[in-house]
Length: 378
Image 1 (cartoon, rainbow, N blue to C red):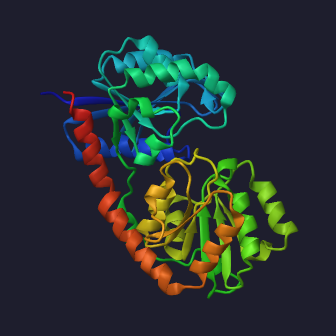
Image 2 (image 1 turned 45 degrees about the horizontal axis):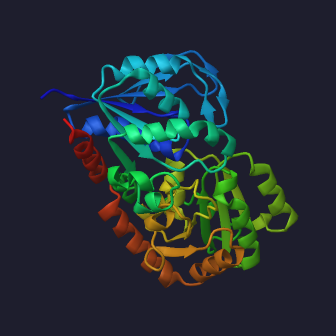
C-alpha cells in the first residue's frame, strides 16, 4: 500500500490569523510528521489581490492560488478552480474546511472520485444573502462527503445543516500542543502593565468583531466594579476603535488594557500570566473557541457562554470554569466577580482545566485520530 495523499483545502493559511487557519496549519504539518506514510499538500487563496504562488512553509507544500480580492468573507479566484482540479487528481483524499463556497464549487466541477472529507467549523450566521446563493452548493457538498468532522457533538445539535447527515459525522476535537504551554517561561507580560501588580488579571484574546462579544465584556467589567481586577484585551479588528472609545467614555480605561496583536510567544506568556480567561462570544459563529484550550493548557479557569455550538463543551461549567448566557452583562459580571474574589476556586478550576486538555485535546491524540479516520477508506 502506497502513501496516503491528502489535499487540505481552505480559504487562507499562515501568516493569516484565525482559528481555522491554525487547525489547517496543524493538520498540514503534523499529519505527515507523525505518520510517514502520508503526504499532505495544501491549497488556499492569496489574501487580497495577487498572482498564484508555490511555497514551502515549515515543511508544508503550499499552493496559494491567485485572487481578485475578498467579497463577503470569501476569496474570488478563477485560478483556484484550475489548481483544485489539478491537485485533486493527484490525491486520494480531499479535505475541505468549510464554510468556503469556492471550494464547494471547485469540487463539483473537478470530477474528483476519491474520498471527500469535510471539516465543519461553523454555520454561516451573518451573510444571509450569500447563504441563499450558497445553499445548493453546500447541500451538494454534504451529500457528496464521505465523512464530516465536527469538533464537538454541539456542532451537530446546534447546526441548521448537519442533522440530516449525522450518520456521516465524526467528532474530532481541535487540539493544542500541551507540552508547549506547560513549558512556557513565565514572564510578567500582563503584570508589568497593571496599575497594581497584586490585581487579578482577566484576559481575552481574539478578533475584535461582532460575534466575539467584547462590547458585552466591557459593559460587564464596568458593571462588576471590581477594584482588585484589571482587564486585558489582545487582538485587532473593525470594532477596536469603538471599544477603546467606550472604555474612555465610561471611565474604565485605567483598568482596561488594549494589547493589539500578540505574537505566538507573547500570547503564550499572556495565558501563563493571567488569572482568568474570558470568551464572551454572542453568536454561534464562535463554534469552538480554540483559545479556551490555550488558557486551559496554561492552567487557567475559563468563563465562556452557553452558545448552541461547541463552546460550552470545551470548558465545562462548574468544573473548569463558569458558563453564562450569551449577551448577559449581569451574569458575566457576576462570574468575573466570583472568580476574581475566590483564589481557591480559580486554582481548583485551573488544575481541572489543565487535566481536561491533557486527556481530551492533546495534539498528538487528535492527529492520530485524524489519520485513522482518513485512512479508513483505503
